[in-house]
Image (cartoon, rainbow over all chains, first blue to last red; front, side):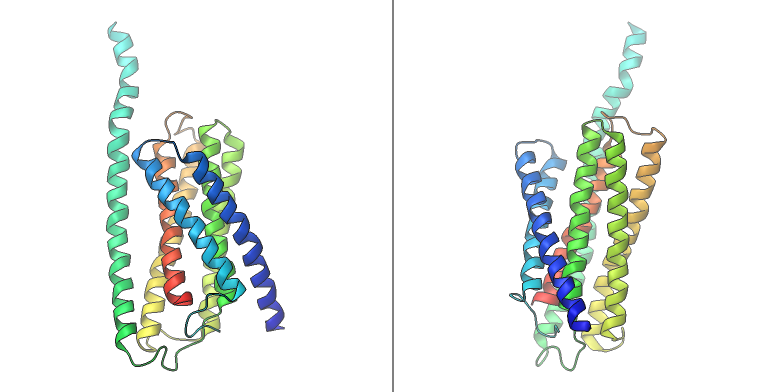
Length: 70
Length: 194
């Protein structure tokens, strides 16, 4: 039962991780030429959001797993 | 002439104060970043000083953490959509996306509570327990504050406090929510991926 739940969680994380990655990447591309201090911070944060999505996908795939993680 | 000047004054004042308000808010975020960095570096130092890691510590649930992280990152995307729709003058879509952000934020907090129940560790269970609960708890508190913040922004928008050309408060709320997302990228990495 727990294994099934974990599989579902992993599948959801991978699917929505891909969605979030593309949304962040497209938003970053659209905002790339925008000016103003807040937009520079937005760009940085969208980039890190895309990175976070990749990390989430890799963790769900079991590629990146730290010590002490089940 | 004098009437025209007075009519223009709020716009001028808005432009003049907008940059200052954003800069002030960014300074607040930097101070928050310093707070998180202190705890993160303390955790990493203690972790690398110990013999073996984690010494009989709890087992974290990577699948739950991964899906929970994506929920929070997804809320960053929905908040971005909310602000973009406001910029384009679409109030109903703005309201829908900000409500979705609040729901996802609440979902993330629920996931955190599940994680706390799942690992079964205590705050007093050594370096790991203390660091894990302090950092994730502090982050959770920021998410909770963010949910209240976004709710207030939504209510203010409903009351007509912002216009489609003057919306600094909404920009700052979006910055705050992205900040909370980005902090979780770091916390997720150090607790689950290292």
